[in-house]
Image (cartoon, rainbow, N blue to C red; front, side):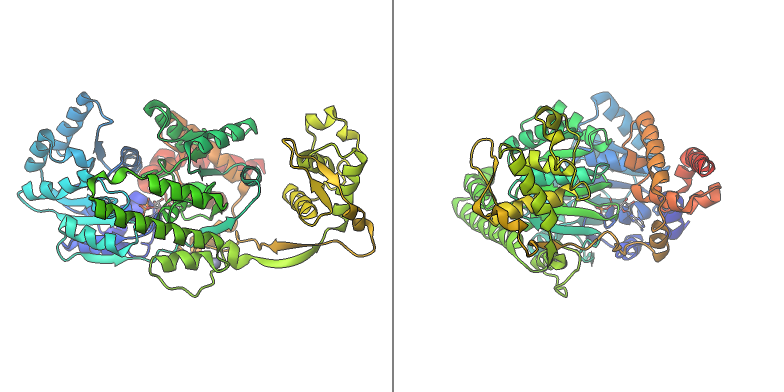
Length: 611
Ligand code: ADP
Ligand code: ZN
């Protein structure tokens, strides 16, 4: 078999992505490699493909248990023998796995760095034929990086103990130069073949906004995207609690994650998220490293994070499958102060001297400044981030909120009149929400209770989306056409200016004109697949998602490990009828075709008949 055959047979893909082939060829030629590629670029394949073509075993050092579990799950699904050795296994399970490893049952073994120098593991390793050692999240070896893990320093000691030095492959998504140089030195890579693909994540849409009411902004988003899975990052645990609670009150299937929860609850909540039982995760930055969920469609930052590195990494958890996804940052000036406070409090740097600590704090404050610039700039957001990492772009991406913000005057006369009439006729007793619900004609029980369902304005703006109605109301209050009181329960009141909306001229509101960005394409896959995806039959897609969820529940694996969203969309557009056609679907390899082909082909056939 050659690398192309492996790619198709096990992973179901026809072509390599940027950088993959070069790294694979180097490894097969016996060279060390260092791959620096953004999240979602496909780093795993760079060592998994050569692992299958090499004689011996590939060890993968990985920092996080959840990530290993996911990777091994994915490999097993593809029909590849793999296992992980970490603290999530009981002693008995660990011994058993190690025993099987000794018998040569596994081609790829994931191992936690702490295990490398243990007696049991060394005993196995010294007797085994190890062809390659892969270091995932290699930046963890750098003491200057953000995620330094002392246990990563054991990797080099471990390699020195082996009788034959395996070829080394290191990977990271961290873009800063200092960290890169540190990794090469700390892992003692021998003249590595260095591959850096661009850091641009073309399928991500970046947006910064400064809403008055952050929670309302989140609600608006999740209401408009009800089937999507996403992460909402908050700075403080308390905010996580509040936002999650409120979302649940509004009927959103949300869960939470932060360092203050018990291990058991964290594990459960994480699983609920991975398995789509609770598709919305509200979390602090403790959540996410190693979370491999590929169908995260949005990442909302409820607060500005402390630096661009963190932002890029956290926002980058969206869209690992290459599908269009949104990264939204809700900025408030208060976030700057909170972060400054956190930097001053920072006590993690105990390992450093006084002088080093001072330097680190200074650097952190500088990074925070850059992050604040990102939130307040009027130029291209993508360009800002890429420049920060030393890449130069044209300065206009056409796919971020700044590039797309074009201000237009819209005529809101009718809406303004309706709102003011509604406020007046209801005796100036209600807040924004009741008024907005009334003119929109929402059927909430509250409106029946307070009599607003009988108001003459009820439902008069039913054609206008809720966000627009809110925008109009904000505009009216901002321009003095109405007044919103400062009380605990703010109420909308009329002003002297209110009557002006009934005057001769139209009422014009400046609004950001946002073009639909969903039509643009990520350009990562072959043109053919992209073209196919254009005709996705979304009814069928929903049907196939149900089939996938059922399989996932039965096999106790996350749905995206059965098939990615993209594979399902490809199926929904191509509607394959035979196993041969099924194998043509993006992400369908032989093993998955054998296992699931029947079920999905049946579902597709049934759907076609039903039409
Ligand atoms: P990374 O580790 O770089 O964040 P992954 O290895 O998890 O990224 O890959 C991200 C996604 O891209 C996975 O769903 C993977 O199956 C898919 N992928 C990787 N290589 C290819 C390829 N050559 N063609 C199509 N999809 C690919
Ligand atoms: Zn832009």
